[in-house]
Length: 616
Image 1 (cartoon, rainbow, N blue to C red):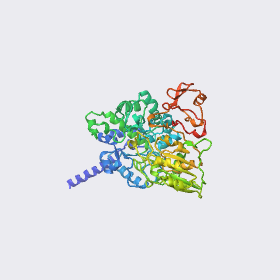
Image 2: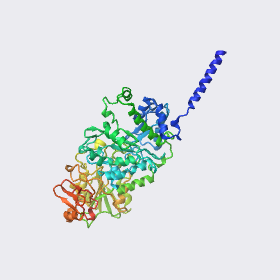
Image 3: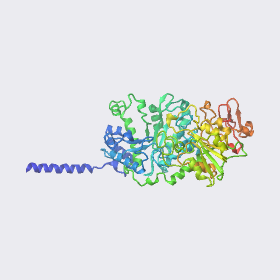
Image 4: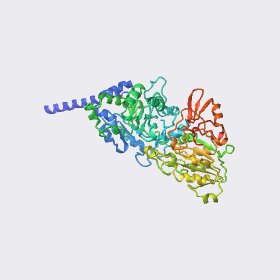
């Protein structure tokens, strides 16, 4: 009996101890505590393995709740095309993320994970999401890309860092507006309807030799600061939560291994307080052997513990600021916003404003645009006219993008034209009509839509920048027989100079996303053209790299008989005939030049949109 009583007493004591342990106050779980106090408390409780786990990001395809719990994983990523199921619904995405989050919450300390996604131009992995124009188009509305041969050029806004700086306004759109008294450089996310933004790729990835992806950017420190760095200054001031490092090198040194620029400059000098994230397996590219055991590296004094603590503190700061400790699970309250009409109208507006008029009329007195909505019969032609995948480009549903119309929901340019014209107008679609077809029909005009196929990253590197066949043949055949406007769908300027004389009008539409109706809005005159080129359009690839130095106007239209010297003098500038550059005599600055071809200012309305267009 005594033994039984003793056992019962011990059991009672054990139960009381468990209850008391569960009731222990955890400062880091208290939202009323100052942020630094919460972080310090949590870090004091973490083991090395838990810290290293927080620094890891697992791809969704390999992730499970059990693995997140076992290895204390801090983040999961959906890379391009990484989805829970083909054409998965918003509800499916929410349930998938929450199941993974439960694994993170089941760890000893219950630190929530961050779910990351490559949302390049909208929530582009998600079926039925609104796909916006790629950055190359948004930059026209106003990451520096200095060479269009680069396969990621469409991910950048412009070659002009001032335009890129202006476009950092997307950060408060994603994260929320920073309060007036908020400390500069500190990440800020304003609530459950906002997300943590990522500025990338740090730094100089758009300036590599010949535009080759992941290549070497050869440039001195002063030029690196003045060309490639300015938008990071703005991003940090606006509280960007994360910055991703580039695969590329700067003067031969891998950016992922560049302690001076990442630690010394970005963190210490610019006072960036968010966390720095590597690109996909970027650390493995600089370690030998790859997939090294980083806990081993710390335990054996290869990597100092202070380095680990710095990274983990930054990661936890962002998680606390995002409110993940209070609201770790996603809910279904916003699923009806996916692909909403409000979002599509905004994307349609972005398409309208991204269009650039490059030519209108074979002479200024007879412009083709705007097109008549009441023409008896019109032709729509070209590989890209009825191809949602091509008009969206890479990073749409999959990493490399897709051809065709079965990838997601949207409006092709052909459908947009049919929606825009009068019911009495007969719209004929023929992707690549031959001469006999063109001759046997009496078309009032033709709309030819051609361009680049979908691509991403290295797969898009191009040394020729040519429009693939049958695009060129379609332009020649159609525009040689019918009045035509050519719409170019591309992620960058491409070679079009040989075909321009046959065209009556030419429009750069970039990679416009799902809302093709925005193209028809402008072609048919519901709205005017407002876009201006955000990058130099070259004549031949032999001229590359070619970038504007300052703000210039349109290329001289030689056919209008305008005199170069008169136009230059009108701006108080002088012509440097040796380099073909326009020099501002008032400031002594080079305004622009195209390797021997002068950049001037045309007074004619027909070519006003030809900003930096070195063609004639």
